[in-house]
Length: 74
Image (cartoon, rainbow, N blue to C red; front, side, top):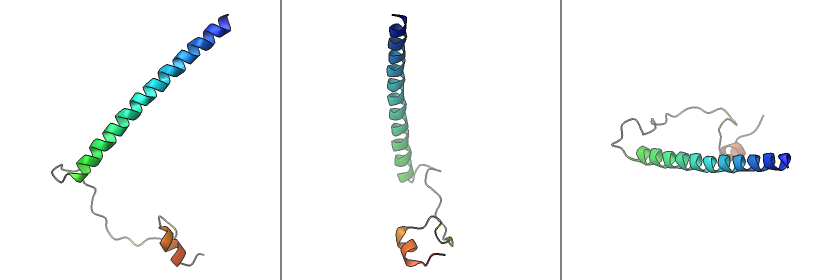
């Protein structure tokens, strides 16, 4: 009987953790949506990413598939 009670308690704890995980996930999603909205709003100072500067890329580093296909490999 004692093992079954312990197993039931662990199941309840797992259910609570799953519920808390769902709540945290909702908070993260909400924060992400709010931040993305602020990035699109030019009246929010500091929310827009800095303008991208042209950088010389290294072959194969953060390159897109077209670049990799067009450039010869080592």
